[in-house]
Length: 281
Image 1 (cartoon, rainbow, N blue to C red):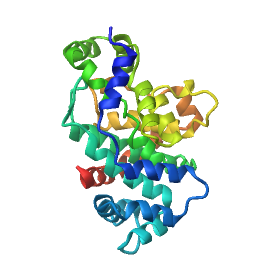
Image 2 (image 1 turned 135 degrees about the horizontal axis):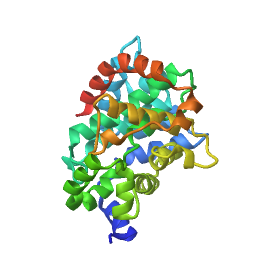
Image 3 (image 1 turned 90 degrees about the horizontal axis):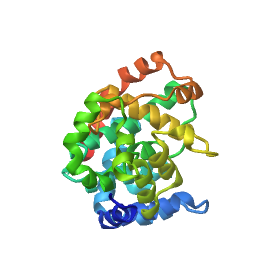
């Protein structure tokens, strides 16, 4: 039996997000941080600066003027959007060529992550829900734990594929059966280790089981939960169990989600997902 300590040891050996992302995360959490503080972190990082300007000028963010400086990007987009971009740029660099155990190449995992981020934001608009801060980043990093536990599932990949085809069991439950934990719990540990915002920590842990999230406001987790299921429905899957995804009826009721919402969101997001996916891939 694989121990929790072995999995935590794997977390310690993973590539980490760039230092700038952790620094920006702390600034996001501080009520006294300023735009100047964000600029001080970003400007010394040429890669982050280039990606910030490239993404700020993309159609997804819809700015009507060209962004030519870090200061201007922060002013026009706001600190939380800047963090979304920094997290996207950093995360794209640490995804391995293939996720062992899950049967997907990095490009598919990345596209799924982007799809969930885009769908969560679009879903909030469609459902007239005030989008929680860092919703995009929370959607992007919801499967963070898969980076750590995939190697422990590698020898079980063929068996997992057979069981998912024959049984109605979810991939998350099979993770729990084999490892004694799942990618949500491990994602929580990893997000804490990387000093990521609470929004990311909660979503990593609870995106498959929002009803178990306790006293927190589950709006953000609910949106990512539905967006994750929708991404699989639309063909942006990221593991062997994409046919086992369902939307929790309690979550659908809380957000007043229905088939019309699904149709409206699906018709408007494909181009955005592809564009955003290609930005860093």
